[in-house]
Image (cartoon, rainbow, N blue to C red):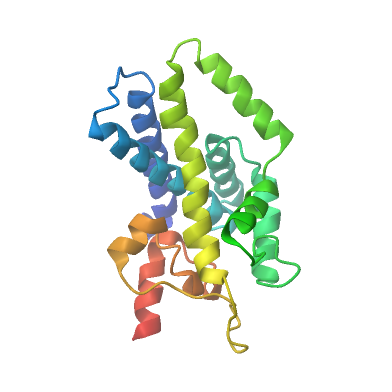
Amino acid sequence: MDKVNKFQGIIWAVVLISLWSANLAYWIQVDFSWSDPFVYLSILIQTHLYTGLFITSHDAIHGVVYAENPRLNHAIGRFCTILFAFNDYSTLRAKHHLHHAHVNTEGDPDVHQGPFLLWWFKFIWQYVTWKQVLAMAITYNVLKIWFPMWNLILFWELPAILSTLQLFIFGTYLPHRGEHAPDNKQQSRSQSRNHVWAFISCYFFGYHFEHHAHPYLPWYKLPQAKDESLA
C-alpha cells in the first residue's frame, strides 16, 4: 500500500495525460457532424481533462506529484503545462507561490477583486507570453496540414480556453472574491461538501480553504481534508 501511495501522484498524472491524449487523438481527425451531441459532450470532457493537466502541474508546483524525486516531479509539471497551450511552468510556479504567500493582498498576482470579466482578463493576461502565442500559432498551422481546421479549433483550442474559465471560476473567483473574516488566515472559502460536484467542477479545487490550509495535499486528498474540517 505504501508503494502505491508513493506513486499515486504519478499514476494520476499518467491517467490524465493518457485520457487527454486519447480523446484529442480521436476527435482531432474524425469526420464529425454538428448535430451529433457527442461532439459537444466531448468538448466538455476535453475541457475537464485540460483542467486535469493544469491541476497536475499545480500539484507539481507544490512538490506532491512525486515528492521522492523533485526533478521528476517538476518535469511532469512542466510537461503538463506544455500540453496546456505551451504555458510557462517557471512563471506559473513563481506566481503561484506568491499567491500562497500573499493571498488576497497587493502582492497576490491572482486575486484582483472587481468585476468578473476584468478579473478574468487580468488573471489570464499575466500568464500569456508572446512565446506561448507563437508556439500555438506554429503548432496550429503545422497540424492544419494533416487535420481539419474545425477539429483543431473545437477539440484542441476551445477546450483550453474553456478550461482557463473553469479554473478561474472554481479555483480563484469563487474562493477569493469579496471580503473575508479577519481571522480567516487563508483568505479563502470552500464550496459546500459534495465530492461528486467538487470533482466535476474542478478536481476538488473548490475545497479551496482546505487547499490553502494544507498546500502539501494533492488534489485527490482534498475531499478527506474537507470531511475532517466538518467532523
